[in-house]
Image 1 (cartoon, rainbow, N blue to C red):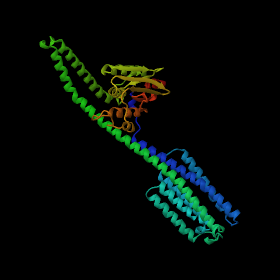
Image 2: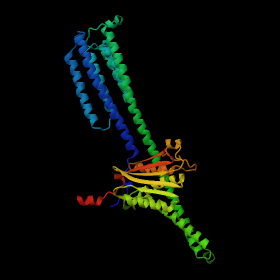
Image 3: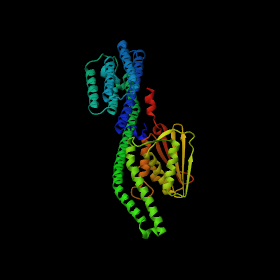
Length: 447
């Protein structure tokens, strides 16, 4: 069974938006995991400095048990992150709650709000404000505030003088300075990273929305083209009948010049009817219908032959550099995509156009070159946007816009540039896996 490359399911904008959210969620979860590892190391260093260096008594067993619990939870979070499944806000919220609970337990065992590291709650709130939305943010604020209130009433005492007038000689002042610097550094580092992740997500979502708008634009143009093709069918048929009658009128048969012009008009009407039929047929082929089997080399040779037969250009250079050949589906939409690029090149350079085809690894590259004035800087900046054209006529720029969307549908791309020696070059890159023929019948026999 022959299948058009356009019959393959396309990735919808909704799934792409979901992918952007999934990627951002995973990166944010990874930031939390890294922050928790820093908290583990920081708590171990603080316990060591307070208990052994300053000689202040601490319940080491209980405090180290809390650190061990954070390590276990962080390992579980790391394993969750490696599954690459989407991360929901509730998971980030639970992780932050556990971090707040661990901090509260450590402060309870080491002086409560008399411990200078009580200001680390502000770091948890700042991270939550960047990661979470709506009620989750205020829930973190309420929980952290409640923990501070509880620590003011209930905590195990720590013999730490809070006289700030002693300056550097006061362990409390040193703890405040360390807590301040730690908060400042971690806020800058992690908030910057999280903001970068969110900006990347927003950029991807904006690209998805732009892609959806372009696809909607293409659908509208397709409907208009199909309707116009239906409407043009009747007048073209009428013109063909009239021209046939003219050929048989005795007064006209005796004039060879008129007969030649009538024959030319018939040829042009026939070409118009072929174009209209192709528009109507391509709608069916885009769903995998009416496609025919060929090879990549034959498809390109036939495409070039058809284009040269219907367009006038002084010099057309065709370089087929394909070393091998692969079966594929001849699709009118794919052919029209290349025609659009060739037509643009001919309009810019009616005296010379070149098409070069070659295979690079698993991709087919079609390079169309001309000797025209090239693209303006404004057009190159907005290449592929509809109605961006150097031709200065209404509706210009649609050909390259449609070509880029067709190539993107096939997992490829269209890149335009100006050549240093003059003229323009448009490179169409298509994945061979997307355009080659899939022989499903042989697969079915193999089962």
